[in-house]
Image (cartoon, rainbow, N blue to C red; front, side, top):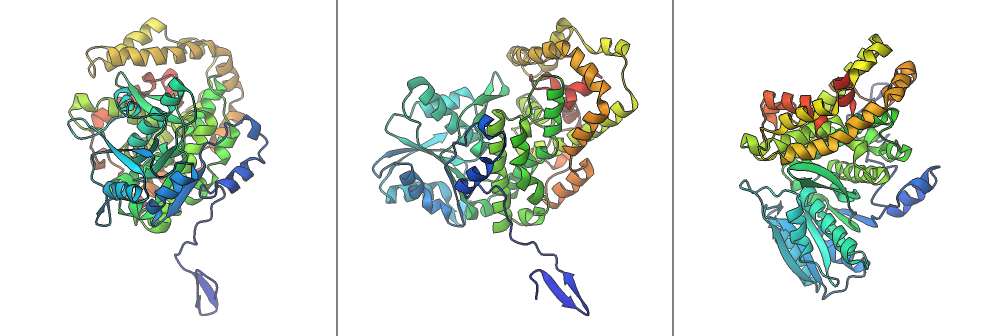
Length: 484
């Protein structure tokens, strides 16, 4: 009998059963992954992957000592173990206490460092938290981060800055995934807040990531669906990136599209497994998230998976304190915003199909710096009366505005060759907004503002979507829609 089929009458009937996932670029086998990408024609232009290994399994947490030993960290070494105050259960065990015990039993000297949160208990990745970790480092220690995106980004950036300031060998860093919620684990950048504004900074990756499937299976569902939402920009952000390249504001790296093949092939078919938090579902989601970090590494930026949808989420985060609500699950916000981003992209394509602007119309698409500075400062003033947030946003946005003004000839050429560009854009949009919404629903991802882990009003979401382009210098479809 063929696997996955049932004999009925005179024919085979296919059962609703998924075959075990097969990964083209499997982060669990970094030697094979590196060998495959070494065959790419643009390999020599890509940053080399710093990630050495990913340990995957139902009991992978117990391989933490093995991870440290493979990095040359000997028993007896002081290990700064970074975490937040959130209780994480693995079965009935306290995961963080389990980690400390495993390290201690292996002869290491774990030093527990608990990052302090805000009034809601939420830890924010900002310069102060990075300094807290960096102050505990010395040349002889190793670092283990126990957390998701925020704890990982803080730990990565602290280790990165420590070496930048002091030189010497790269500090051994092992990251234990506590949730399938973000791609931060394998990205060579960190999202660190400056003056209340989220910014992407050059950083480093961990040497080893530990993907303990039991921990991920026991993780609360809202974090898991956040990871699903954070992957869906793969289906929209490359189109934003291509638009920026057409305007001379970016350069698309082909390898970034290739390395996410597994996401395009496996993510949506495995939505049911992910929603059920099965071992296979957690493996697919976790490996897809780690591959997303690699695509950001190749781009030297978050741009392949951070377009219009991400700035909407950032805007919701920036308005949280003013609204008196805690910061929501980033990936959930991104997932909902991605549906809006896809609708915007398809609407923009349709508009360009119907309206090919002439040169007289083009002249009206370039506002003055004075006009836009007033608009940016006015937009963020209610959130931060000190003006720091608005000035930081204007500092970044003004760069984009200047480049947009200088890109007039490129925009005219873009319109002239619109059929060619339309074909490329459509190839970068493999799924419609409706298809993505249906897939998110299968993963039990929220689709309404009121269903988010931290709900936002429709008015606040509309504000975020309308003004997202004012936050940073990265050009996306929201900028083109605004100028048109």
